[in-house]
Amino acid sequence: MKQKKILAAAGCMMAVAVIGGCIYLNTLMPIITGYAAKNLASAVFVSGRAQEDVEPLDLNFSFIKFNKNKVDFEKKTVTSRFLWYKSTAAYREGYGVTLLRGKGRKEFLKGTYPLPADSYPDYLEDGDGELRERLLAVSDALFDYHMYNGHPFAFVVLHEGKVIAERYDKGIDASTQLLSWSMGKSFTNALVGIMAGDGLVDINAPLDIPEWQNDGRRAITLNDLLQMQSGLEWNENYGNRSDVNLMLHSEADMGFYALSKPLQYEPGTHWYYSSGSTNIVMRYLRGKFDSDKAFLNYMRERLFAPLAIANPHFEPDMSGTPVGSSYLYVTARDYARFGQMFLDHGCVGERRILPEGWVEYTATPASASEGRYGAFFWLNRCKVCPDVPEDMFSCNGHDGQQIYIIPSKDLVVVILGYSPKPDRVMDFNKLLSDVISCLPYEDEDL
Image (cartoon, rainbow, N blue to C red; front, top):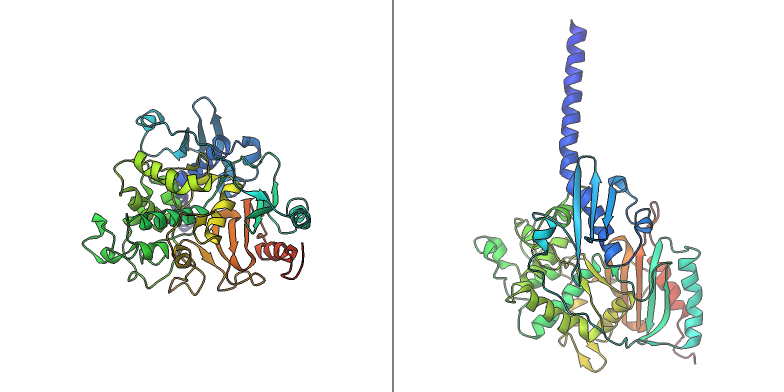
């Protein structure tokens, strides 16, 4: 009798564990299927990559690799299924891909207005031929011999504003738009700067967000958000059912989800990296315009057009707000020109795009960041790359998307791709130091 009771108790415990595991797994399903659907759809319909190339590289990890993905080229959707759950992402011409949450595809497509196609001449010129020859060894080491680890898609280097290295992976070229991941935060920084210069926002004034007016959040400023010091509760862990995963894969209005978080620290006193902060900023900027159309036109005319960035895809969430934290698609040369604008103190040629002092503000360490972060840009003040000058600042994205800006070397380095290996990390310090070693010394006559 005692043995039967023990077995019965063990059986009950096992049943509870199985049920609990299934309940928890069910909460992960929007993330598991949403990640696959969204990223495969963007890779196929925005980047023009083949499904059979994307799945074994970009989606070959954790539960994500077990999805069954169906690409519908007629409807321009991807549906990903895992066990009992499915998610669908839909592409719209000019907008990019959005993970469908709360609406079906047909309802989502209603009210979409056409975005005009852009065409601009690329003002980048090739640099000195001898210098380009020197950099070929670095490009070969990166792509052919994987000396820096990772799987690069694109590599562009500018010195003194001219192209001295450029190479692409198979199936990718200079016209391929590639994912920014968190480099999109730095583009959001530039948009804030432009709007501040136009008198549309004040980065040091408390934000007039209605949901914040009855508690301590009413003191939060754009500066606090840009420097990742809002004090809002947040979990940026990508490996579980965290705030960032729920926001990107479950929420129709990502900025609202983030701004609904309670205050954990006094604004301006605690640094914590948060993708939610950027989406709050983008939602706030969108609110300064009468319509999505007006906002997107402003962004294209004031930010993208001066940089000769044609037909950018700053993909929106279901609310229509671009996902500033993560989902920008432009070309490697576009990213390089963006970096060059910051190297040139906010100017493109003789034309000023960012207000005076904005780049200096961007590269000023946030007070609680220990020198590692400015305003939606990372800094090398803490020597994360020990063999690279301390004045370097950078746009860093998930899975190794990078724009490095090194003023003392008049250098911009762009590296894009699915950079990590399962057991290795991309050695950006060595890559950058090898690039710098190819540059001429001051007294060397090229």
